[in-house]
Every structure is written in C-alpha cells, then in structure tokens.
Length: 614
Ligand code: F6R
Image (cartoon, rainbow, N blue to C red; front, top):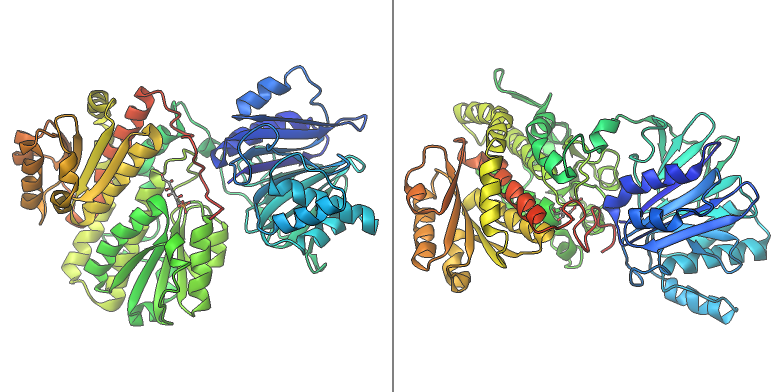
C-alpha cells in the first residue's frame, strides 16, 4: 500500500517520478505528491488529493525542475485523504521532506513528546512525526542524515519504507525499510528507488532489494552504501531483473483487468511450465520436492490467505483432500494471527499471496513459524516479503498483476495448488496411477479451454448489459465450484459496487432465498459432475420464485439450458479442475458490468493492490 519512488542522477527527476507514480498507482490512489530540489537549491513540493493525473495538472506551469526528487501515491491510513495529509511531509524547519509506506505504531507517544519540545504538526499522519523526529536527531546530534535516520528508526515500532530528501544536502537520498518493500535501481551514474521494480525497469535491470532494518545512502557519484540499524555495513547484493517492460503496460487493452483476464491461457501455462509432463507422467514442484519427507508424514495442511487468494485456498482444500487424502483447514490470515490457533510441528502451513506483501498473511506466517510448523508460500511477486519469509514454496509465474481486482493470479494459484495436490498424492500414494495420469492430461488442456471461454466474450457482454443495473446479485456453486461463487461475487462487488453474495447452492434455502424476486440475478455454476442434479434442483427453486438464472454449464448441456435465462457453455473439464475454467465468465461479466456503470475498473474506490497494513 502506498507507492514510493525516488531518483538521483543527471536526468530531470520529475518525469521519472510521475511515470513511476503512474506505474505504482495500483498501490494506492487517494492522493499523490512529489518533491524536487532544483539547481538553485530550492525544495519544491507539490501534493494533491486524488490521482496522479490531478497532481500533474496541479503542478503544471510550476517549477518542477531538478535532478533529485521523491514521489508518493497514497492509500490513507492515518488521516483522511486530503492535500495536507498527502506525502511528502516536511520536517519542522522544512529542510527535510519524507515519503513513507507503512504504519508507525508508536507515533502518538513520539508526537506528544515532540509537541512538548515545540514541534508543530500540519497533518494527522504518522509520517510527519517520523520526519520531525529524524530532523530533531540530526540537529541535536549534529550527525549525517543517514545516521539520524538509523537513530530514529531504532525508536520506531511498525512498518515502513521511507525516503528522505535534505535541502541542505541535495546530493543524497536516504532510504530505509522494514516490512514494506523497496527496490533500488543502479544506473550508470544515477539511482532509482521504488516500492517495486516497475518504475525502474526501463532505466536499468540492476537492482538491490533492500532488506528489513537496512538504511541505504544513494549519493551522487558514489557507490550505493547500506548499513543496518545496528550500524553494520552491508555489501549490496545486485540482482538482474527478469521483468519485461511490455508486461507492465496495457498492450492495446482498455484496462489492465481485461488484459490480465485475456492473459490467462498464457499465465496458467507459465505456472505449470517445466513442472508437469503428462506424456511421461512427471510432476516436479520445487516447493513440495524439497520437503518431501514432511509431506509424507504431515497430518494436516493449513492454508492462510486473504481475499481472492483465500478463495484459491478453498479450492486447494478440495484438491488436497480429494487427491492427497489429507485433512485441510483454510484460515483467513487476519483471524488466524489473533486466535492463538493450535499448530503442531508436523503441520504444513501454506500461505498464498499474489503480492507477497499482505500484512495479515505475513503475520500468520510468522506465528506458524514460531510454533515450529513448516511454512510454504505460493506467491506471484518474485523476491517479495512473503516469498522470503517462508521456508520454501512455489511461485505462480503469472507475471505482474496490475488491475486491483485479482484475476490471472487466482487461476495461476489454483494451477500451482493442483500441481501440489498431485505431487502430494504421488508422495503419499493416494491416487491410482490411471487417475493420476488422466488428471495430468486434464491440467495440460486447461489453457486451451480458457481460450475457448474467452471467445464467449461478446455473449457475456450482452448478459452484462441485461444485469448492469441490478442492485443485488447471488452467486451459487457446489463442491469445488463453491469458492468460484465466492470469487464471482467478490469480483462483482469490488469493481461495480453491486452488492453480491456467494453461497453454496444448497445453503440458499437456509436464508438467501428470501432475497429472490424477479429483479434478482442468480449466477450459478451448473457444470456436469456429481452435484449436477442437485444444482439443477437449486435452479428450479430460484425459478419458482421468479429469479433470473445465468448459468455456467458444460458444453452440450440440455437440462439447465431449458430453464436458465442465459447459459454460458464452457468446455467439458474434469470436475476437480472446473474452477480454472468456470471463473473466467464471472471475471468477464464483472468487468463489463463495471465498465457499463462507468466505474474505474483498474482502481476501484477505497481499494489498493497490496494490503500492507492490518
Ligand atoms: C480481490 C483482491 C484481494 C486480494 C487480497 C490478498 O480481487 O485482489 O482480495 O486477493 O487483498 O492479496 P494478496 O494475494 O496479494 O495477498
């Protein structure tokens, strides 16, 4: 949450900062701001409530020159989104400015002490408190900015990624992080800094991922210097980025979300690439392979995640229990971390996170580790905090997901979970060889089947038009399709602001059926399989109350088509793999409804892509 970007070198900083902020806008878009020091030593700060575009309009015609600067796009935590609470924030003398991502938990006590010592605060933010503290230390100890930052951070409880700019020393940026991500790009004679690599990629491929409690000094004309909070010098570990520029651009699509929905045949393939070979019956997933013995003996798997990733965990529960015959529990990370849960040393905890940054998931991981469990991660962002905090795991390799609503990450997570469940079944000997082989072929066929579903876009758009003005919607599914109902409802509510609920189809009659009238669309997954007849009965119950049925059915279906208002035919798929194909119509439907309602699809209100606060 919150995006930060910084530049020091010989180029004009402002265009680099603005472009970087546009790339980071998925992290928060309540307000944006920049600060640059020009060649005369003036520190110019521009900040504005709203999107980066509003900042650009506001700063237009002003002096934005300078080849050192910082920029910030905010997702509000302390203090409402307004111009004053926007970053950068000034120190007391206005000589320092700072941008911050994270939360300073003990800011109130520090603020009270600073006020007693004569400090005046303009905003309600925790960030302003920290920059005041840094300056007080700098002046009192007569020390370098980097030392003042170290000293101040030793007094801080909380999470942060900060960059500080000093008007009196326009040749250095000082950055530090704990719990929030930060990447430093090393150019030929310049440095870039950002929350992720997307603002850096077009300038350099050489990056250093700052570790927790490290303070970096990016000084013009010098090598990058890093010390930790105990003042130990750290040798920077320079890595080469594998990210490609095209992968973070819209590539002709109107929205990132649509691009990412359409990328799924490719991203699902990428998530299984080199891991599965149906013709030889091989499956090889580092995450499981490295901990084979633990998997053989494990008594239980606990999944932890939030949001869409939690829905993927629910699919995982069906897959692991069905294929690996192992008990599974699925936990909201935010509940698990505060519940004193019973965790045994022979439990395996699997944390799923697209961003690899979600604060609650990270806390759940630390808790599970402290109880001695093996903790594995399924993350999309390579090198992310969660990927590094876990004992091992598997990346989803879906490529950058920029639309705030998760789409391709979900299908990639389920693909990896399927491979894990299959490998688990192999290790534990719980699947007959013929069924194992059959499933490998079925998994390999998924990308082609998703491609088929994408061809139904026009029809789905027509359905979207019919239901775009609904105020409520119900999503139903049974078995492994129940989590898809939850995911369908989440997609609709988060981007179109239509109230939607996901339910196991048979639960409908225990309450939600009361909502059904002739205005209510009910979106049902009614594909062929063990629960088919039961779902058909549930559909009849809706129709008897004049509800509208929009059903995802198996190609060639006759029964549901007779009663449904609309039927979306998807290719026949093994029952266990239906979520990978059946979620796609719900993604497209939400997308089109949101566009038709004039909503900001890629940046829905109040949301941010990485939830790095609890
Ligand atoms: C919904 C969505 C969120 C995330 C959730 C977890 O479309 O994107 O619900 O799934 O915030 O995020 P990650 O997977 O990054 O931990």
